[in-house]
Each structure stands twice: as structure tokens, then as C-alpha cells.
Image (tube, rainbow, N blue to C red; front, side, top):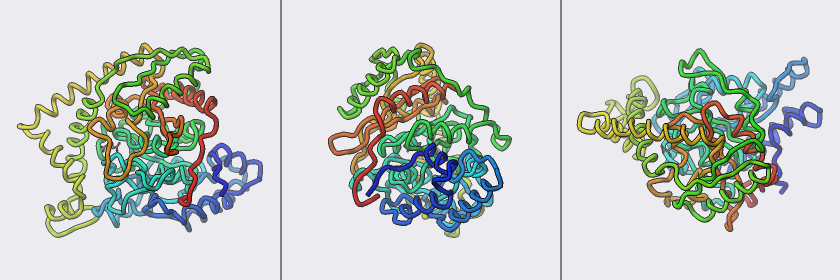
Length: 465
Ligand code: GLN
């Protein structure tokens, strides 16, 4: 089977020069998505996708200019798309059909993108492995005995397996970058506020952003430029930073390869550093930055506290599942992982637990200051996304599992995950790039330099795709 998947830029080009039609592109992605063997989708919207693709074809023939004409996109099932159920992979919202769309999806749709379906995730985006979904776990296209990473597990699996050309994920503490890293993809966690959160089902609003997940850096930038920008429906939203980045030859890059990561990750960091150096960047190794276990603990206290407030709306009266009393509704409607977070969150907001929350807020400020200091000295920090390549179901990665990616969410800084190599088992290993707020352009420039030196990342092989 031919595993070369077209990038968004290639799809746009093929449609522009007439070698493909939106309808043909849509059918080709659907032919794979309809045989989803990975559990990537919760809801496939095949018929609506074909109608949308034909409508895009008609708009093009009327001479309309659509920057993403006919690009098939999958959307994480915690991002609302009007008229299609949005479950958050929870029994609580199993039958919830939103009447409005998230601004990020609305902007993609207006640009000509076609919705293929809604993707699986850890319940309410809480998790790092894609195993806590009410609808079942997601498998990794590079090895079905491995997890796809989470929480945007289905979005990652869908793009890596060619079910969609791009996906939207969300990232509260690494949830787009970690599965991207496990599935050989690029993901951007944008500067806080540059992508509207309107229509993203809230988990921890001070941390999260909607993210592009794509095959290439160029594709991530194409999606980002369409979805970014102030939205009157989200008062925390703001315009993005400038598009033109520095040349890598003018960049100072810090390499942080901490002791707590596997040899796979260390090897990927070293390889990426060499690639950046060969493009002219000056790369300096640093030995300390922050403690990932502490970042993970701070993240957990703050995100759980926010979740105990944002998820209080699921009481069986206003949305979705109801089991009679609010207590029984919540006990039966949420999975164990979500309930544990809500209890933690409620506790840290009590008088007894409050010192933990206050300490987390002050450590958040200290971590942010450390990240600001580091990004004032270097244009880009090259660092781990996860501690390892994709693990087996049930294994987890230990207390610091998201610690490396959490710092971008705690500080509001942008961070890009880029795949670098495959390990001995053929599993992808990615690296993370961190820059100061509104410096996405530098991340894209550094990411493209890695891609140029690396060449096309190999697509998965095997029966699943
Ligand atoms: N793994 C983290 C958690 O479980 C991050 C989740 C996310 O980014 N949505 O909370």
C-alpha cells in the first residue's frame, strides 16, 4: 500500500492545478477513515463531509478564494461543531449535540476545510495515553500494541493513518504535543490567547489552547494562521505575533537534554541539535532549566482546581446524562480518572487544601519567570516533549510524564513538537521547541530546519493503515 500521504500544501496545490477535486480528496481520505482500525473516531461524518466537499467544489468554480479548499480535517471531540454530537469521550455527554461551532473550526470551515469526523480522546481531555475514553482506547498507527498518546489520541492517530490531512487537538498540559510525538506528527501549542477557546469544552481555561496537528511544520503554520486572532466571543483572545521569523542562521538555540529521559529521546534531541547547527544556528547545551516533576505537580493542582469549577455544570439538569440526583449523575456519568481530578480540585480549593493551591500558584509564577529568563537568552529551547516513545497500554510514564510540556501551558508560551526519528521498534520520537510568547514564527523556522535536514518522516506500515 502506498503510505505517502499528501500534506495540506500538496492538497491545496493539486486542487488549484486541477489534478484533484475536493470531492476526490475527500473520498480518498474517507476510504481509509471508514476502515478506522485504531479507534481514532467517536463520530465519523462521512456523508456530511462529501456534501461539504461538493459545496467547496462549487464555491471554487464560482471563483471564490478559499485558502484551505477541500482539506479534510478531523476535530477532537471536545471542540464543538454545530449539529454533530460532542461527547468529550464521556458518558456524561454521550448524546450532547451542540448548536454552535467553536471559532477555530468555524474559521477552518470558512476557509474551505471539510470536517471528516470527531476524534477520540481521554475523557474530558484528562490523560496522556488515550486510554480513559468511554468509547475505548486509541491504538498507535506505528504499532497497535502501543498507545497513541493523549489526550488528543484520536486526532493524532487520524492524521498519522491518513484518515484526515490535519486535525485540531487541545493542549492543557501537553495533550496535542505528546500524542503528536508518539505518532510522528507536528503539533503547535500556540501562545495563550492567540487561538479562541470559544466552543472548546473547558477543562482548565487558564492553561489550554486549541492546536493544529499535522504532518509538517508548514501545514501547522497554514492552519495556525487561519485559526489565530482575536475573537469577540473569547475575552482572553488576542492577535498572533508577526509571521516572519528569524533565519535559523541568526538563532541562538539552547539544547536541554535532561537526565530523566530515555536514550531514544536523548538521541532525538542530539540529532535535532545537529540538524539545527547544520542550518547555521548556534546551539549551546544547558544543564538545568526546571524540575519536570515539580512542573507536573503544579500543573495537576491548578488544572484540577479549575476542572472542579468548569465541570460543575454537569449536574444532570443542563447537559447530557442524568441519573436522577446530581450526585448519582456525576458518580455514574464520569469515569474514575475524572472523579479523582474533581476530588483533588475541590480539596485544593478548601481551607485545608488551600495552601497547596497557593503554593502551586507561586511555583507557577516561578516556573514562568525561569522560562522567561531562558527565552530571553535564547530564541528557541530544544527540549523533550515526553520522557520516552509510545509505551504499552497500562504502563504510563511516571510522575513527570507531562512535566516537560506543562511549562508552556503554565507560562502561556508557544511550543512546537516535531518528529525527528524512529527508535529500534519503529516508534516515532519527537522533540519540543519552546519560544517566548508570540514567537511562533521562530518555532516554525526552527521546525522547518529540522524537517529539511531530516527529510520526509516515514509513514506507518502495517494492516492498520
Ligand atoms: N496529561 C495531562 C492531564 O492529564 C494533560 C492533559 C491535556 O493537555 N489536556 O491533565
